[in-house]
Length: 226
Ligand code: CA
Image (cartoon, rainbow, N blue to C red; front, side, top):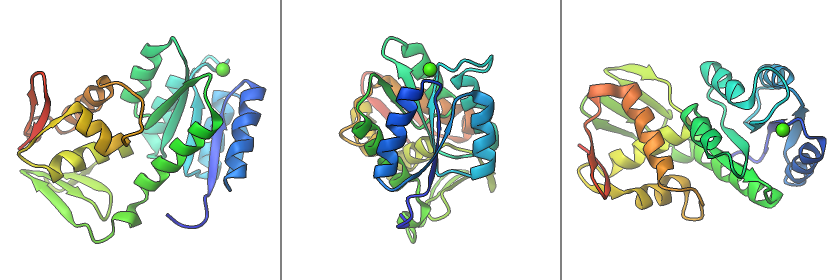
């Protein structure tokens, strides 16, 4: 990762939470742009080209955070961390399906949020994998240097997590990996989500690569590629 932490756009309508997140991220060296509506948030992302977006799901506009996530994903691969209410599991699952990279449940520790932001940025930095080469599984290529997935030579858009998940599976071609192993390998051992997160991302991989991806579900265990 470059020494410059860069800009983060925080889309959150509750000024207390926004200021708290802002303060902790600044303390960690980030430049922070706050937006209190979906519209202002999307404009800020288009204008600032941030390295990451912190996105509250409960926004006051007609467009909620999930819609913002969907819109962002259609135009950019910027990492997104969503903030959700503790009892809103459906939001978390939907958010991950729409391409969010991680989520933090309110009420949350700002330190934990900053740690997750850091972890995502570390993983999404292509230069960290420079010289790592390309993994090939049939018609699918996982280019670790360019952080790119190609299907029969054409680039397919993936989120950071989806990329990492496919890279992890491809790196262990022919082996059965449990959901726990995938969580540890892709999300990190300290990640506190449940196994369903893996299933949600696997579904996205299958949707995007279809029959070209020789990915088998091993019932009661996990997944095997190749
Ligand atoms: Ca809110």
